[in-house]
Image (cartoon, rainbow, N blue to C red; front, side, top):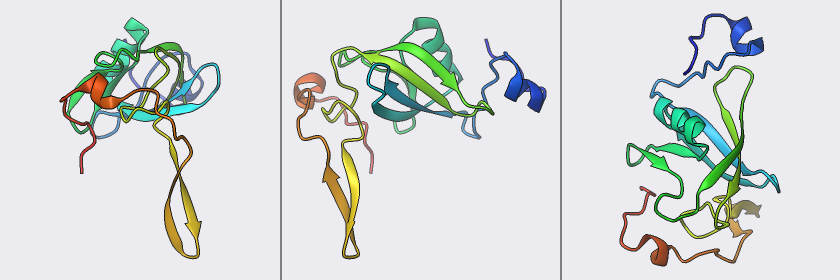
Length: 151
């Protein structure tokens, strides 16, 4: 499905998809809501996840903590249907524009994974919530499934 990276000119100006995966076989992807433009999440894809995303029209990621392909929404029902996939100039980063089914993308229960901002006051740095309402209760959706966040 992907082309070989043969020349800089072809990578930057050509019409062939030749993604550059890093040393771990991953490419970063940022995902936003197609209607609002809101940033929903950042993740990674490997070759298989990108291929599955293209073939199915739904987002698939590679979980670095669990070391598995992850079909977003397979457990929760909050699928991310692809409207458009963009790739940057040197084809080493992807921007996915999606329609979120069920209105949430974060496993913590918020609409977006970016629900806090970094604040700094009097040399003290901390976090401040920008979203205070959860879209769903994670315990209700995921039950006793292991939390993907690792320390």
